[in-house]
Image (cartoon, rainbow, N blue to C red; front, side, top):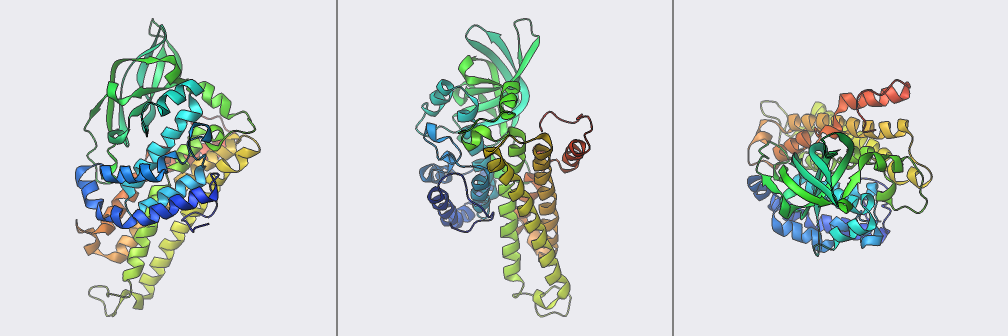
Length: 403
């Protein structure tokens, strides 16, 4: 198998994974060339999305019964990490849109899922799981209104998945669901003005009294109950629990960006000396060389934690559902990896010096992307340490239902 940032195979065939990994590596020069455009336009260029669709990236985790490759978490993260070496924003959009497009097949009824996959030649689905909408039960479905921020990939998707409180005709909450809606029935507010991951188009999606047939709504409690059961023969996205996967699955882009940042700075260590010191090159300074090694170990630590968590999702779930301690640890693995990548990026930028913060420098773009990407709400380090500790100590959970 072709080498990747994570050791281990996908659960798709090795040939499929290797082909996509090679495609990601081949795209790197073009992704780097388009990086400034991606940042300035605050969206992934259409030609990049077209290349990814043609290669089949967005089919990676889609169940094979719906024409996908049936890949798992390890492979998905490794592909995102490879794309991120060229452009972290592109990798982020691939991650979020690829995951949610796969969720369609795992979460909805076969009829509902097939209707979405058949709605366009290459139907892509973005989403925001937070319950920022309200779905009122009516005959045949629901009337949905809401506003969901941080919808990565919204500018390239034909469907949207939004979390919503489901209420009866009197407005009483009766459930919490994920609602799938065509983007043509929604509006996008241009709200994504940030310092990192600028090209992800993570804008706000708005629904105003949209009718949604019942086949496009999934009950979250019912989905969580299914995750606690063992279903032999399930494909990876069918059996992988949502909360730990959503944390671990986000780690591909910052991991790949950190690898590339380290490689670029290591490549320059023999080429110039530190300003105002009597070293011909940075390589002559034991302090700077040690810092380079320290940052490498932090990135390796992050990769090992991500690999452990992804391995639980891909491999352990083939034998039995994950218990709460393991699920909490998977989320903590992601959070710990995120913190290590931020620390490594800071060390690397200190080695590179003030010039690395020039607006034209690719180094500061990777640094910004790592810092913003690893601060996603599902990677909130300190609270996720608490979630893990509470499960280890058999304390009453009181922080989140997403374990």
